[in-house]
Amino acid sequence: MCKKIKSVKIAPGCISCGTCEAVCPAVFKVTGVAHVKEDAPIQEHVDLIKEAEYMCPVNVIQVEEE
Ligand code: SF4
Image 1: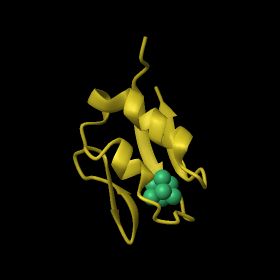
Image 2: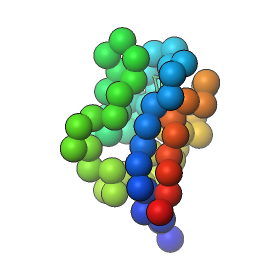
Image 3: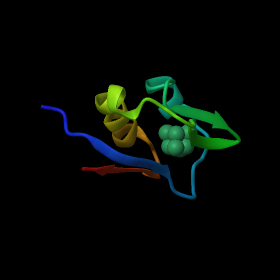
Image 4: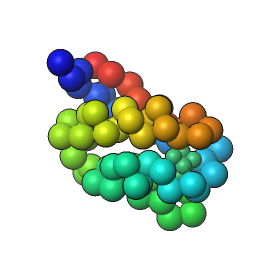
């Protein structure tokens, strides 16, 4: 069963590869560096957010679970 996510943050060091936006465009936007969209529907995309976290080549996506 999916856990809930408390917060998603992008730490410094993003190399703008675009993977997170490709995996979950509802939550991530890459403009220069990656950002979490304002009012992103995080709880509706828990699995994709975790996939993006796993796939980020420099491990800067920080997912805090509840
Ligand atoms: S996957 Fe990681 S390195 Fe690539 S754009 Fe997203 S945060 Fe940046």
